[in-house]
Length: 295
Image (cartoon, rainbow, N blue to C red; front, top):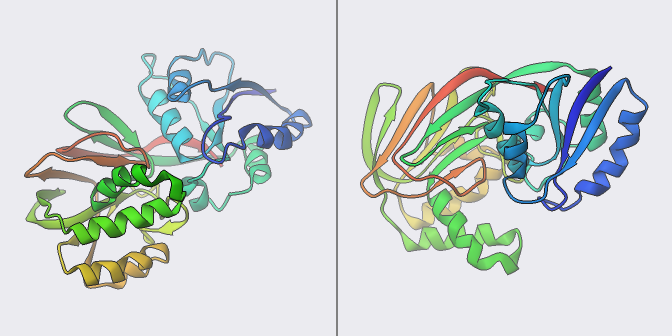
């Protein structure tokens, strides 16, 4: 009989972790798979568990959560002192479910059934080196307006999901200049940018099709680069990010690379897999097929 740890985040994302557990636990009980359930108790707990759990006798580490939970699991697993790299499984339960959206598996029941079947898929991971820390990203690395708006949005939490739209519009109207050097593989580009988003998945956030050409197992990361332009043009561009139509815009440069660096004139914040962590300069290298995921 296969055994998995199942981490449940009762407070994250939609705060429905325990209700989803009630829904899917009977599926595991009726199967040939045994799960040991652990509830997270604080922010970063899933990271800590992935990093320190004794995995002897287990076949993988699973969780009920969203992109934030998966980010913690990936970083905890890849920084283990014993270098054990066990398969990861995710049962959809967060606010942002970009990775599971790419797998076309947003239903918790279907996700549980896939874990029970035990099929594995290798997934690329981006190694993200910043001045103060090392991170591993499965989804996005965002710099410029996308990170600045994330910080500004925290002041508008009463607006719910609309706070990001409001913050983005305010950042556009602010018209901040962001002078930076990009190194794309071996090519050097110096310019004034609005934002750079590097994507390992098609989707990010709530179903935004940021990188419609992206594949998380091709050894490359897709960059969406937007240089400074008029405020009117930028405001017209943003709605297209939800459909993927932005890639047809003359404002957007779409690149696929194996490594890149962002070196701004002034150090600034990053958005890594939806988390507002890390600062520039940042150096990113793709690590092909770095983790295995139960799909």
